[in-house]
Length: 413
Ligand SMILES: Cc1cc2nc3c(=O)[nH]c(=O)nc-3n(C[C@H](O)[C@H](O)[C@H](O)COP(=O)(O)O)c2cc1C
Image (tube, rainbow, N blue to C red; front, side, top):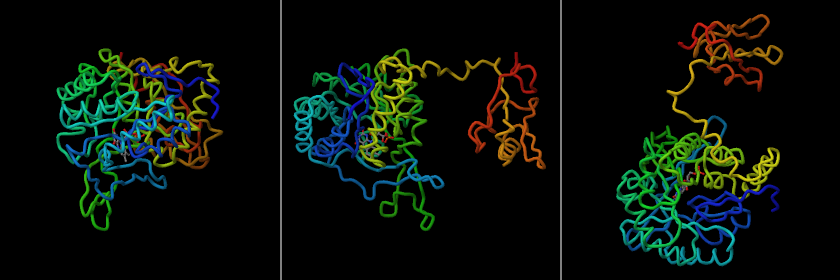
């Protein structure tokens, strides 16, 4: 595949031909799959999380997936009940060595999860010896059958700091710590990882959620022999939560670590959003489960075209540019007021803006039922833009700035 723009990144001193990686999951489960992903154009792979079967034997529940469908839109989110790999460690290490030998210019990140100091150290050393470029520490799987593992560890600052340090002592590889979103504030955990020596932070792992219920038998899905659980949710509907955490990490003055952004990336626009919020490296699972490795082609082409259109020479020029504009809500100006503007020519008279404003906002839309046209009462309009968001016509409703004092709901001076 030929790319027009330079999409390469430097992440923890490692050169990636593009920022796109498989995230740790079934999409990067063995050498044959990973080879196809590299051939398709992915810059790197975070291999499915390794554990030591001598410490804990993984047995996956069945079935293990459920999807969140909304209206006629299928797969807007995915729930999984999967744990780390159930393949033998020797097979995975052999596969990692194979991949590095055959794809020396592609990046391979080994994701690991231990249950003791010895486990973490052993997994780190084995990965390094197999040729992995970097490690990702899985402090975030929300459904490990073993209770002292996964996201429970990821909520315990001391354990995060300690195991990161154990790994840093055991090997010479750059290390990133993968965060759980099942927490109010990610920064203290990320700082604990930094204290332990982490070189980067990756976020997010999946969000504990329930996606669906079989109303015939009142059983939530996935129905695992009559029972279910709140387990890891991912994909497009998880993206707003992921974006929030990535920008939190980027904007933390104390943290100052590079970020690998994960959560709902399926298109080049999703990728761009995460770059703008501070991600340098980008990881994908659900988009691949849904559409296959081939989505990389559109992501590379779209991002590349965007850069050329804007004369952007390097991704470094845009990383974090939107995160800089995220402030605390308490800092919003109260001196800025807008009202909606309806383009009469484009209004199709459906009345949706009227209904929503009437029942859900400030009764600021007037509707002429004879002419079937909506208009705005600027005195009443608070500029919430509900009307714009429900209007079925693209660009029919816009907004303009007004003197804040003219509306009844003007900001307080
Ligand atoms: C079926 C499945 C299995 C996963 N297994 C792992 C895993 O072994 N290790 C890990 O760190 N994350 C795992 N994840 C989480 C993903 O790597 C990723 O953080 C999450 O799915 C969000 O990204 P996405 O919206 O692109 O899927 C898994 C996700 C799914 C859907």
